[in-house]
Length: 282
Image (tube, rainbow, N blue to C red; front, side):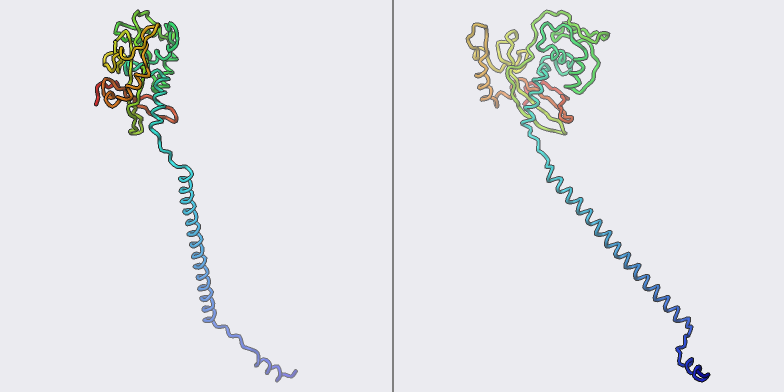
């Protein structure tokens, strides 16, 4: 190939021009493209996070709704609770409060410990403390117990041996068990259960009447109207007493004494917080 042909071929080859403005435009386009990609990634991330949060919130709402459906709130049946509390009073011999009074819980505890025990002259202090804790949810200092007839100490407390010693009083004991108990009312207030009871007592050494109190003071029925013939002495016709009392309860429920108990509840256990002997309340 001659020189002229070589020169002609060079003239026909494309010329590469190093244009600085073209490079700047290309870099600008690349930056714009990168910005658009970044914006798109941010937008997609926001959408994903929003959907994820929405899913979590909806899932929690559904869980809460399903939980409430699965665990419905059970409404308390106060009538059933009143029966439980009456049984509690009977089992723990709390009717003796009607005799000994609200401030004599040591005497009440001793009465329970001695229930069914013949010649109960020594009482373990530990048993008394456990009863008070179980029934009243209290811990108290054990002391001498005075007689309900106000004639001195009935049980002397010995702290060294932690026991009570009977001091040999001679008199008829007071009846601490009613012949009939009737629920007057029950209500729940501030988380407490307030139970009011009417009771019938009969003590032949105290009165010839059936009364609303263990001391034979407030008369409800005359004993002779309910006396059944018997070779073993006076016998009450409890069927007739029950029928007459129930049939006339609206007239009799505010006559004489009523007994009000305020209970608290911890877990499944009831505790007696307050006791009141109410006379002639309307």
